[in-house]
Amino acid sequence: MVRVYSIPVKKRKLFFSSMSVNNSLILINVLAFILFSVLIYSNVSFLDFIAIKPGNILHGKYLWTFLTSMFMHAGFFHLFVNMLSLFFIGSLIEKILGSKRYLYFYLIAGLFAGLFFVLSSLIFPANLESYAVGASGALFGLIGVLMFVTPNLPVYVMFIPIPIKMKYAAPGMLLVLWLISIAGNVPIGNTAHLGGLIAGLIYGFYLRKKYKQKIRLISRHFS
Image 1 (cartoon, rainbow, N blue to C red):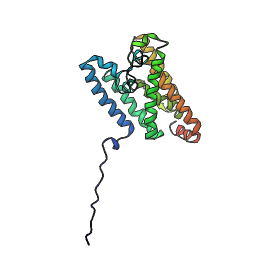
Image 2: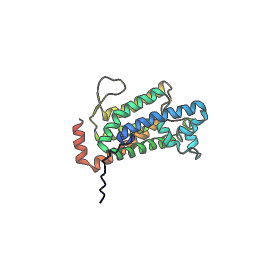
Image 3: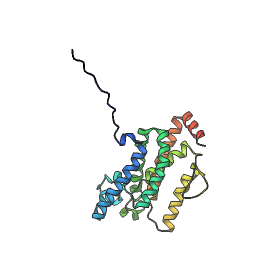
Image 4: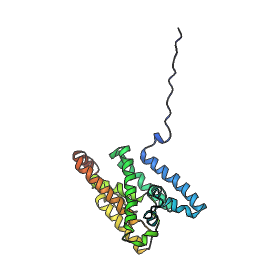
């Protein structure tokens, strides 16, 4: 009789599987930025294949840019600011929602922000030929959720040394960015930010109504 002894082998986790969803999103954003930047540098026409442009979308072209534009940024500073914000805000939201629900909402908020940007170009025709890139739309979606889930959470905004409650900081950030873009003629996707914030407010309102007791406890904990 032959006995077969099995030697226990430790299963190694894949690199991505050992990371949180939020950290994985940050890594994907960084890698996508490098790849897309190289492509655009080699041929500027690649921009149409990566960034969302209302004029293209309304003609049924490059529809995948709703997704790719979420992972492209206009420069290193743009990437750094968004990823730093995502590191803090996204980590908190992932703990509250859970990894799977967090990932789904992040993508939905980003897609809704892009759609809002495209539809708003029908009101602001100047945006028809503008390009939009960045994780800001999805970020404002996360911020919108926090306005309902942790409204009294103290946060620091744009190098202001005084903490501001989330319920005031979110609309304040939106307003400041809008004023900067108008006064300085800076190309900021304000309508995309607004779209993401609306998606977040809707989802945050839903969570607050559906999980009243849990949200009350979370809100109290982060007050």
